[in-house]
Length: 143
Image (cartoon, rainbow, N blue to C red; front, side):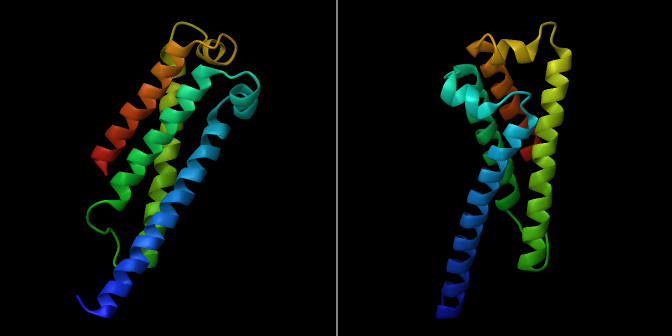
């Protein structure tokens, strides 16, 4: 490996690492958008463990989707085209997690949001988080 290849490798590692961190920060804000309540108030003010479990598992799900996108073969011919494609597919993956949550809430026979938001039902928060992770594994497999 010559110096040019080493420089390119270091640039790619730094670029994908910083991009991955930015993607996970974006996923953090995406959870705030899809949650029908104030996430920060629930976590900090009320110390709601159900919301904490759901949000943490949503982050894991986002990381699983991101792993599927950046691992393996490149999908585009140039670095910038690949970055744009990965970003777009990551946003699509987050959208699919939201769609999965909508389906989960519609399929339950009880008030899902009330159980997490008001009742602090950890079991329901874990069910929602597990659903996020399972859905992310399916998305990862498709990618």
